[in-house]
Amino acid sequence: NAGVTQTPKFRILKIGQSMTLQCTQDMNHNYMYWYRQDPGMGLKLIYYSVGAGITDKGEVPNGYNVSRSTTEDFPLRLELAAPSQTSVYFCASLTSGSYEQYFGPGTRLTVT
Amino acid sequence: AQSVTQPDIHITVSEGASLELRCNYSYGATPYLFWYVQSPGQGLQLLLKYFSGDTLVQGIKGFEAEFKRSQSSFNLRKPSVHWSDAAEYFCAVGEKGGGNKLTFGTGTQLKVEL
Image (cartoon, one colour):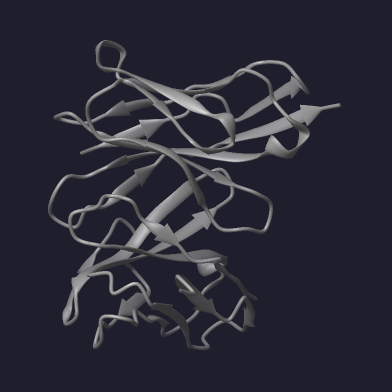
């Protein structure tokens, strides 16, 4: 099992550009999550999904979109990148009946 | 809404000394509680978790934590710190049901002096 994988590891975007952060898990987990981590702020939930075709907003969803067409994949889309979206992004997954989230290695994004 | 407070932003201890990292939570019922560790440039690794039962829980790397309902606390402890324990530590409270979401504290940065 590779667990939760994220690509890319690093990315620099110009203001106004768009990109998709990829997240894939091979554990057949129903639940998936996207967090952002800013220095001194802990992790904040952006979006989450309780299964394929179902997504919902977290605490800080503005400027982001997600989709969940398969159990394995949960991509995060930034449409118009802004400097405030400079952060480290983590994807996580969890299986029904458990409450332990498994985290990917993160994507470090800089918007300049 | 649930919340987590980690009052210590930075802590420095000498190698071999004992460690306690504080965590206070706010949640309407019996919470699910977690401690995660993050080494520089890495993802989050689960140290230990509390769901129910024995209020003293053991984790990996020699860490333990005690759930105290009366104090709404879940402090992390280690009897003897190793230099490799230097990292950032996050406490989190888990929502039961719904999306099983986690709410994280702001983290405590641990520095270990040799």
